[in-house]
Image 1 (cartoon, rainbow, N blue to C red):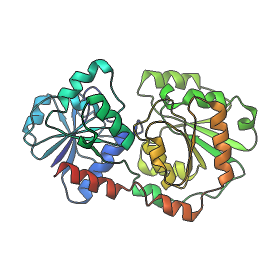
Image 2: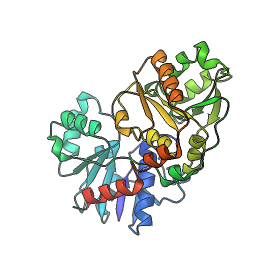
Image 3: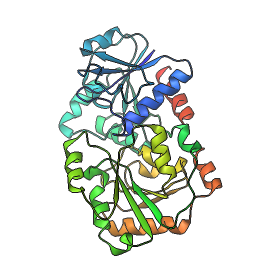
Image 4: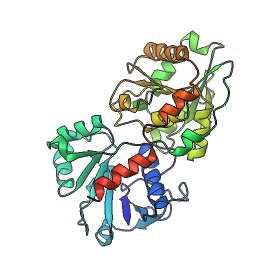
Length: 333
């Protein structure tokens, strides 16, 4: 049994981030291989996200002390690191998240004692090694992936307008304000482009506030967050360009890989782990610069509608199978 310990204080909700998608995808693939796997949550009872992931086994604990009774391998996810309880076998901690505050450094150094450490990109691994004051060689890299559905979904035919999509959370860190500033340039509001914004991240107050600001927004179409892999794959297959204008250093950027597997070009900020997501359909731009974002869109348009050859090449990178192979190699050796 491999048990993924979800962070305390937050349910595991679909459509809210890469950590959720990564964890659910790993569990599904492990189970497909005949390896028992589950997600452990705290303090939510059955309102812990299991209704968003009906094919993923969930177990709700009342106390973190129950982790000590788990058989098999325990994998702490993100800030589940603060659950410092003994485990029957050597535990693993996987950092999907960005670095914590400096005043938390000593606490995190205590969390990793006697644990295997995983990061989700070379960039993230290097940053964690520096933050924790440990050799980079101690950090194992298990890259995220795109579910096979993204590579299999049928793309729609090109339309007269270039279909531009923002599908990140409604959060300042994700660059939503850079997009809104860009939208005040006349050229993006012309007949050539159609912009869609996904209203994801409404589980947080900042997301709800931005969503209220966007009510009746005239320059882009707003659609609800996609709660399943097939729905998200369909959305990307009906888009030409995905925007990821993050203004902070993303540990990786799973959505970029998913979009490229679906044959959708990506225009993303040249920060953090995003450059590592290049599967052949990525254009990088400077962050916090609406003009640079507009130029990136034009460059992606100039490269043309993705060809079958380009997409076939993209799906060879960041596969679910390779990701789980790497995970098992790390946690079982």
